[in-house]
Image (cartoon, rainbow, N blue to C red; front, side):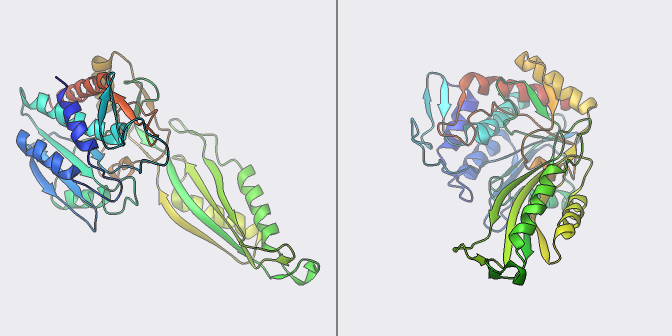
Length: 372
């Protein structure tokens, strides 16, 4: 007999919910949650399926947040079909096993365990089908609805796979900001043999990129690493060697700490580009701000509950990419804790059954700590 979280995870993994598809995943959750007594509200925005489920009406209000959408299986050869949810030698394999259908299944199994003996406060789940995609019609829109209906939680835990090697290692209490930009420099097209009659934008762009990549922005802060800048593409679109092009462009990504904002980074980029080019555009294609849930009583509760359940004292961290926690942080304190992330987005993504059982225990201990 398998653990309840494992049975539910298998049912979710068999839904091929590659963004933006749902393929029945929300229906699986609805059935489980209504069986436990949750009131389930479906909140589709655009083509994105979203779900908010709550049991209890009083405070404190604790929320689990996550996503049922997954990335594509990729072109590699899987040991088993990515949506078959095969268990072999104590390991469950499938796309989304750790990112993050496995954690969602542990959310619900922990809720079932908690509700057997305690009904104080409120528990909710905010589940979106739009985290791996554009993230415009998912958690952002549900949070707006929660604010309008006076249901913003007192604390939220996102089940992203935070642990590098072993369950219990890391709680994420913040994330760096992220900014994507495209820089376009305009010049004057001309013959390569007569450069004095042209203005080569490639030369200007090379100078700009050299300046941007050699200029450290900061040395980091108490909880964040130094800001980084990576050039991700350089594009000219010139098919011949004897023509100076009329324009050149580059794309870059910056991961910035709490010493900066998207607005301050944008101003810096414009200033640097203007030093080398007269005619240019700096287009910001996406930006999310950094956030931090400072260590304090709530974070202490998380650490103690996780240590109790896993036997590992978790460290606090803000590294890695972005998650929907960046949106939640605008409304209430938020942290992230989930499974081991070594196989996320890879071929043969998988989770051990032992880790699923341990994560369920950790989530149940967290509920006990916050709703005591």
